[in-house]
Amino acid sequence: MIQLRCIKCNKKYPPEKRIYTCQCSGVLEVEIDLGEVSIDKDRLRRRKFGVWRYRELLPINKESKIITLGEGGTPLYKAETLGRKIGVKNLYIKNEGANPTGSFKDRGMTIGVTKALEFGATIVGCASTGNTSASLAAYAAKAQIKCLVLLPSGKIALGKLAQAILHGAKVIGIKGNFDTALKLVREASEELNIYLLNSINPWRLEGQKTEAFEIADQLDFQPPDRVVLPVGNCGNISAIWKGFKELKIVGLIDSLPIMTGIQAKGASPVVKAFKQGREDITPVEKPETIASAIRIGAPVNALKALRALKESGGIAESVSDDEILNAQKMIACLEGIGVEPASASSIAGLIKLLEAGEIDRDERIVCITTGHALKDPEIIFKEYERPIEIEPRLDKLKEVIKW
Ligand code: F0G
Image (cartoon, rainbow, N blue to C red):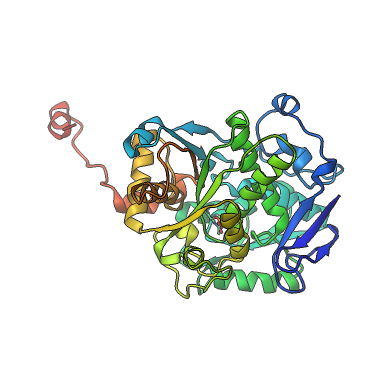
């Protein structure tokens, strides 16, 4: 049995109901009766990696036409060189930039857009700091339905904007920030019959929980001690925590990791609330950071995230833009993994918490890098030296090569 439950007042709704939030305005969670689920490691191992490897734990009707681009199945790297540099023996990087559109959002959209079709929707929509729109545009194209995306004008990394345009979405810039755009798209979804696929949509997060399934699976069902990831609108950390809890309930793992959420200093309402022991956030009016993906002042899933942090005995920390850029360079040059700035905040946060003695160096740690470096090429051109130009002569080449 599947139902929707409000995480604030516990009110339950049937899954056929096309809603995003409760009457009390609380956010909803999908509840699957895990007692009915039969799943074992041997059966899983016979299937290929990816979101749908875990189909018993996903809330989709058997008859549904599944919209997929082959999402998930991303590599989990043992980060030996970076680990040695920062003093962690067992450091892993789960690189979600390796998804079809270059971010973890694809895991959510395969379920979200499939669900949209189940509901008979012909238009999907979102507000976005970029990656959600790139992903939704691609999945809407695959499903051959219309897609509307509202973006904070002038604040979107170029690669992401290019993707949304390329896949044929109706792309509209909003004078304001992400929080303003989200408010408007929520209004529009009611009035214009648009199926909303921001992370306020509880079905979408069901796809993202497979990040937890895959991490456990790739570690032979010996879950890590800790998972560190960037936090913006708070959907992903909530989904991943839900995923680990479900794996434990169905008996595939015996322990749960400590969740560690990292925000950028100029956009850190969750870190502030966490440190003050509160369950509600004070929105940041003018969020600012170079990590544009997580430039969010009023995260809609904050309560879910704060509960995930609390239940797991976790930590929330913020990092500066300089720390983020430094971590981006370390991952790129020590491990060969190119990530966008928001993704690098997980490593930046880990370094900060190790130095503060808040994380034990003996832990087995997984850092999630959420989006590909090419999403935001402008940052790279701004922060790194551009190639010099020379005459095509060997003596000139010798002159300029100084390793
Ligand atoms: N990392 C990247 C690369 C992101 O794009 C996002 C969110 C996050 C981390 C944070 O995840 O919101 O679930 O806490 N991007 C959204 C978007 C907001 O519109 O693309 P979250």
